[in-house]
Amino acid sequence: MTSKASQSESAKSLFEMAAGTSFAPADEPFEQARLVARQWCLSYNKLTDTRQRHTMLTTQLKCPGSVQIESTFQIEYALNCSIGKGSFINHNATFLDVCPIKLGNQVLIGPNCIISSAVGRTQIEPAHYPPQEAGLPVSIGHRVWIGANSIICAGVTIGDNAVIGAGSVVTSDIPANAVAFGVPASVQRKITQNTQ
Image (tube, rainbow, N blue to C red; front, side, top):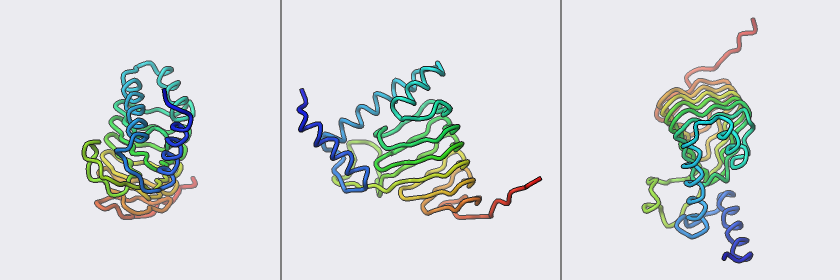
């Protein structure tokens, strides 16, 4: 049985990780948290009933009931993610939530997208984790549309109403009301609202 002191130390370690402090991903608190998240993902991805899915999203990720996430969804820790109301995440999304990943309301994420708050990781398999790792938060504004096969990197902020073209790698901030795409993604034009 785990002692209260051990649980407190684990919680402290996970809190410090989320704050951007360097940590050793192979250490027990992090391995245990990833195991719990993998089990949650496995259970979630097997479900077909919409109500059961909503229950799992609202209890684990604290999502509003209007959030939809398609299979197969993978999230590394399932501790540092905030998703706004009306957001839709399409098939095969991967979130590496070392630090907070915040999605605004009505965010649309295409298939096969990766959002990573882990800095400098080159391998996604636990056996190849670096001895030390750190993260930076990712913030995505309201009504953002992210095209299929895009990667959003650690430390990036994307402003409201932005559109990220399919296959982009976003390594730096994208302002509100902009269309950006490419590797690395850059702003191609501004979006002007039609008031009629």
